[in-house]
Image (cartoon, rainbow, N blue to C red; front, side, top):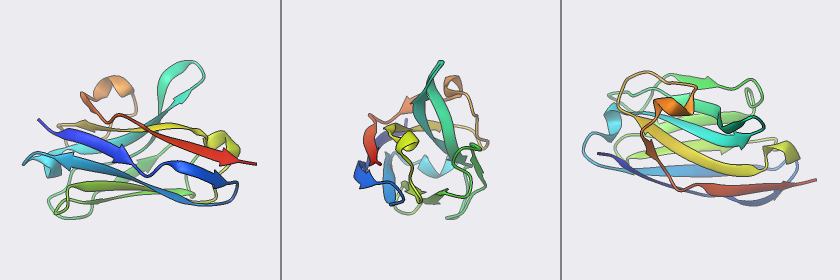
Length: 127
């Protein structure tokens, strides 16, 4: 079973950037789809973006409309890492961000589709 540890959160001004990291463990990390979630009104955790499993260092990405064009997800299976690059941050991006893993090729946009979770990392965007 893969274990996840997310990090990289912090305090940043509006318009700034942060890169979150999700460190995985386990021999099969490359075969997991990884996604990022954050709390949102009406739901425990809302989908931010995700990346499919890949045999190399790439993967297909998908994003929520609210972050499309500002956030980028990438993965490095050799290092067992997934990254969430967040640019042009807005105060409404303030949240605890969680990475999550599912042992299938495809991304799910519902948190119920993920069995493994990181502990969360806090992002605060000041106006």
